[in-house]
Image 1: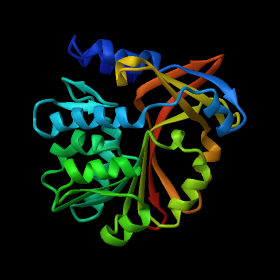
Image 2: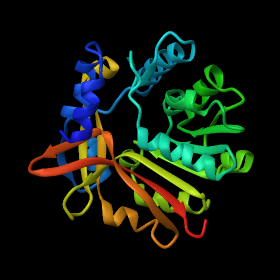
Image 3: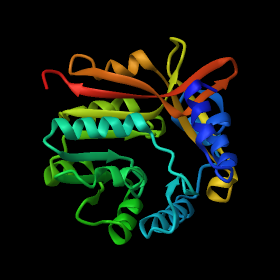
Amino acid sequence: MNLLSRKILKLLTPPLVPVFLKWIHYGRPFSGKYDSWEEAQKSSSGYDAGVILDKVKDSLLKVKDGQAVCERDSVLLDKNVYSWPLLTGLMWCAARSYSKLILLDFGGSLGTTYYQNKKFLYDLDELRWCIVEQNQFVECGKKYFEDDQLKFYRDIDTCVRERRPNILVLSGVLQYLEDPHERIEEMLRYDFEYILIDRTLFLVDSIPDRLTIQHVPPEYYGFKASYPAWFFNQVNLLKHFMGRYDVVEEFPTIDGEIHLAGIEVVYKGFILRKKNQ
């Protein structure tokens, strides 16, 4: 456990520690090394998307209505555990954009990160938080959560056309994409001014990307689930952005470290700014 993780744990109230320890200390166990996404899927139990959506919806509705402090992976917490570097990046981008925050949160669920950071964003002159998600999440988001600030879209094209976001947020999503490198190249075509990467798995050693299976304990969704997940070679992933973006800062995230069969993996994030911006 790194120093940041230990400091965070000292701040937590007792009811929160047992759940959060699973994120920080055990990191939701990963296993295996697979040659293809299809192979990893066959070795996974998968997940019931409908059940997960309902649990996330029910939890976030409590947050929205002020009955709970925050939600993470459908679990309600009684204390907000911020990703301070991500929030710093958001405020920095807003300061450089004349007190405006117009962003695209790719894979942003029903607004977890939005609700977590909302109280710090009230005084901005303009806030547009756009989430691009799977169809069922978009339908649910539009029905229960959408308002003047929070919007949901099925694809990046529509979001960019309607809202013109200049900031792309990729928080805990890249490792769950079948073709993450291709998807990054697709997103870069939209020429975002800023890109914030958070809660992404990187190999400490300089070895190729590794495809694993992530096992989620039943405390999260009420049943055991497992699905493919990538560990990234940092140099290779950042190559997509080099030449077009400067790395303003990189940071460890609150998720901590993972050790798998002698391989060390860390959750990290980056604040990227378009060159000459």
